[in-house]
Image (cartoon, rainbow, N blue to C red):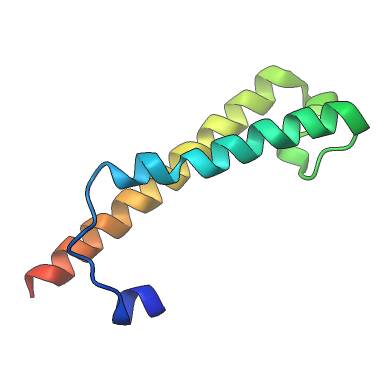
Length: 84
């Protein structure tokens, strides 16, 4: 809410959601390595021991796509708001 009301939105670029996607990607890698080491995964949709690495990667890419799509939506909303 603070971002929408008080933060300047003119600095947002269309490439920023790709940069924002780095954090969830790194977290997924961390969670998979940690899960493999301790045999416990934080979320069922990335539980490679239960659903396999193929499905885990599919789920990870879908989630990353959602993060990027949401980011692009925020950039679009900020640009529309900036025009008014």
